[in-house]
Image 1: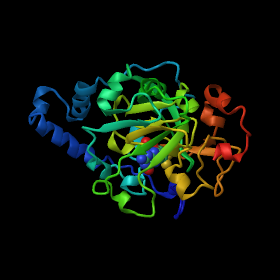
Image 2: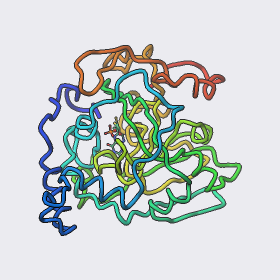
Image 3: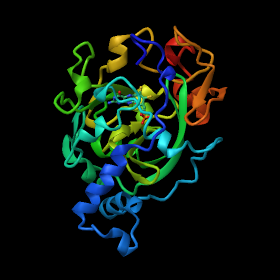
Length: 321
Ligand code: MTE
């Protein structure tokens, strides 16, 4: 994140239609034998969605319990302005991320559980029950923010499936490690693979979401395909992408960013506008697609759902960075 250079919100957003979308459509047309798709009344722009829908049943039904106080961010912005350091430290890595092969994709559930499982991501999601769509706010520690429809399942269902042993206190999540595919992972000063962690109480809360899609479609690689975590009350770096391993443990995991810069990116990282980052204010945020700065909310607006998790802890800086 903002370890060495100027703040990343100075990086101009990429506004052009991604060439990769165009290329992808052509590939899908060719693969489906639809060289004359226009003649069949099928618009090329419909094909990726159609192909995906046939595979996995998108879009899922929206859960009306999770609404927004703001407009949904433009899809083009949320899928082309992304943080995925495995593919580079700029925001426009979406083309590079195309190289990630996400099918098949094994996920391992390990550690202090009754059920140690190695399973394909699709099968895991199928086991976890019906997918749903939720509208969530997302606040990056760098002060940009978005509001997006995620598709997925509550993480709490995975905790149930794994049957944790009583001594399990934390969940530790890990992303793939493949420097041949992900050039960022050749940068040896980063502690690859990307790791994140939360407490088991946090994992059992209603909000943590294992997301498989965004905007009613399967997750684009750059947003963390095939499976990512979404923790809307915490700074965005906690929402780890492209998960390959979930371990239940009695030791507090040290996350990727914490290992690099613990003073700036802590374990808890709960959004709070009253506790500044050491190098900038957290009072306001800029929604993707807008230049206006708006006030940041305590727990990113989710205090009602999560504040009780921290009620017995000292309300000090450690909880909020
Ligand atoms: N997960 C992995 N594996 N690698 C990353 O670089 N970046 C994090 C988080 N998850 C990151 C990651 C950060 S800093 C943020 S803000 C969010 O992903 C961004 O999610 P988005 O790109 O889908 O908006």
